[in-house]
Length: 535
Image 1 (cartoon, rainbow, N blue to C red):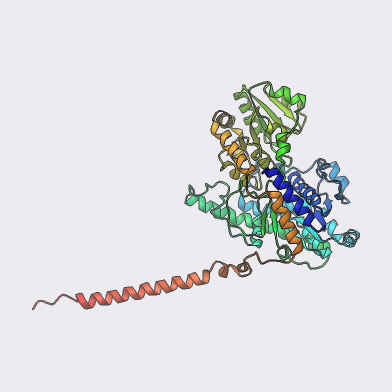
Image 2: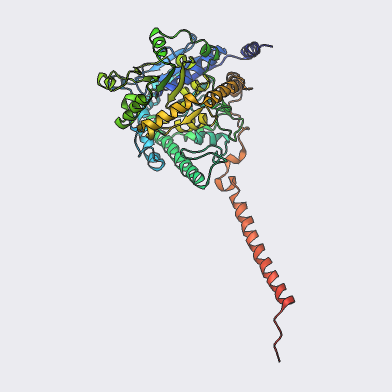
């Protein structure tokens, strides 16, 4: 029987059996990939029959979010803060500091800098939303059944608290350890390598040491970011509020953008719902339509074309000069390859430095280019949206992580054999980058492995959309259920890891060995004895 038919029937059954609920989805306008993910979830939920309201407070004046929501039944509430005119005047924050800063990239220093760099971007709008009594009263009168909120930015969690409505937390990235832990996921040390480490079984002592070092300080950074938000949120509300952990822990599920067939295999619980791949439309990706004529002409120039894009939060034109010089050297080393580079600024002088095989574009039709067989390799920053697109296109990739979860995403994709994780600081070495590109183009194993990953994702036994909708309906029906979270989560770390029992058994073992030693020594003395004296 046709698989698509079965899926359609399943969705129809789900639709008909679902009691429509009023759902408020909190979609902070900050990072494009976050906004796109949540907008897609809103469409899916509305198509499922629920009454959806999308609340969008602007942390920056992002201009490319119009049209992300397709379902006409969704009510969109855009919240423009009083300083929105200031946001319009300044260029959208792109965090160019992450390109080459050794300081914020250092786990120890980053743990203390990150909360203020990122949290500071949320502060003004967040405080205004939660201090707006007219807004809160208006939302209360709408009588929502549930709030769904992104957890990278905590405002939505506290908005649900003020509305006295159950909240379902979600994350647009693969994982956020301090949240996963609240839903029973054990430490993933050893199952997921940290930046700079080899994974098991190749990992050695130094890799494990690096894993522990980075794991600890990444956790500190996340805790401090949330503490920073917790403090200014309490200031905005004007009274003591529960800790974010207490609010998040009330939900029966935590939705993450991880796909178990793409991501590392990690121990988890039923409370953590993986929906990675839910934004991918395979039919649309296979039928992207005809490319604009300018791109058709570019793709005809040479046998191989490479697409370079470093996303929307990190921009190519803000790249350090030594990185640009290395990339230009790479272009010159590969005259038989055409390059399309997403470069977000008109720069005539920079264009003059480039060889004829390079085409700069402020925007590119990325899905359509990835679907074209003439594009041989994708060079990307490793944002999860781009990782999903290249994985579902079966295209080899070079992933150059810049910050955040991108390093994890790079290693996650590379482990399947169709991609290479490349250190951003090596962009300055043009010949090295040219060698990697040549290897990906000429060695068929990368294309074969990328195609195999695509086949796995297409045939995965658990459809992300059905999985998501089933768990959403379940969580709405049982908003306070926590039985899927291990009870041991409620004890301290000593009891959690049985350290007291292990120490006790260790002491017993030491005592036993000591007594055994004493006994053996006494027996030896008795049976062997001392040599007799000569008379």
